[in-house]
Length: 293
Image (cartoon, rainbow, N blue to C red; front, top):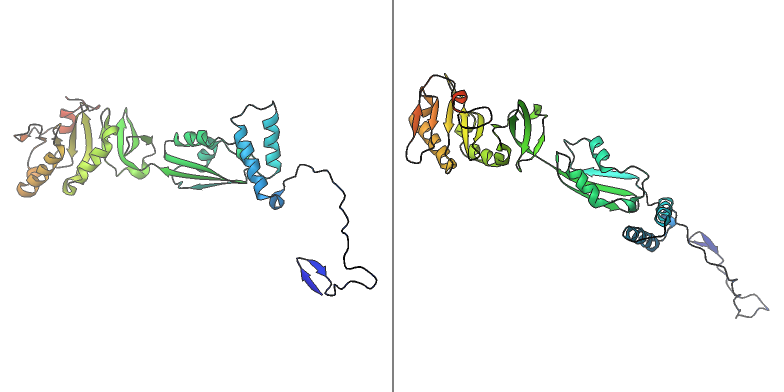
């Protein structure tokens, strides 16, 4: 005896005596074809694909009232329902917030989900910079997000906010980010990337920066931590990077920032103005909103 696909065949297939070797096969009875029922692994792949195409196409077609609902209900019974949602790239964004904004729950008809609308809702979350969402038929949703990276803090109206390189306000949970540069002034977030690059170009000064004020929507005032009082550095509208470099060189060669000064005015292209007053330079030369005093 030999088994093949769980069906047993006799090895002796000789025709019995008295029987002709040619047999006329009996014609099978005609059966009425019925619409196939889809169920898990027994469903034909091409039929599943056809169903998905039909349902997706129906979203943009005018159907007889109730037809689409019936198609969706049929698709759920066929296994085209959300059973798993996988997320890649989530760190600061809570899973509860993602699921709430996504608006998808287990058991939903997977082919009925508007992926474009879901992506727009996800990208409206402050921490989410970009999002992609895909259907993995028959039952899986794949979500990939890229979160924003805070690069500075912005103080406005007595509150502190996280700002990323695009100038986007992320939120006010700053506990893990108190080491970031502090900015004040209307419009400062839009120039956060510029400020970080400016400060980082001179590490010897960067570590002494306590705040930066965006003034008149055109330039920076930088406050340095020094004794006995803070030193205010007034950078020019143009060439701020070159002025910042010159300041670092003067401090290295002449110990400029060790002197009894509280203002270094670098706004004029052909001269450096030092002021000594013994007061709080930050308070004297700028107001809380970053406007000229």
